[in-house]
Image 1 (cartoon, rainbow, N blue to C red):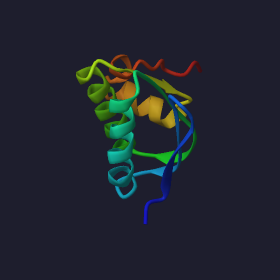
Image 2: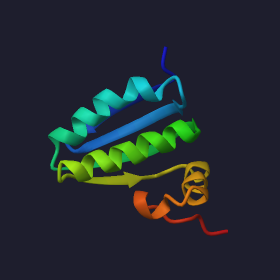
Image 3: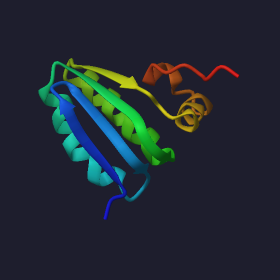
Length: 103
């Protein structure tokens, strides 16, 4: 059973919550992919993500690439600092459009 969930509180806005890991990401991806393809612009908030790992980074990278391939705009918001750190370490911060946290 996935430990993460995806909700759509408003048209064009999606919120991820819970643990984004190797067991939950494959369950989340199909619905997120569909929403990206259906909306001209989508805001994706990760404010309620309690933990994440490289699977979450792969999910975001796939989401950004999918949006670009169908000429849609994807705005990533409220990324947890550990996920931003992982993106920076992987040199994906520019691809994902995130900034390293200020220390």
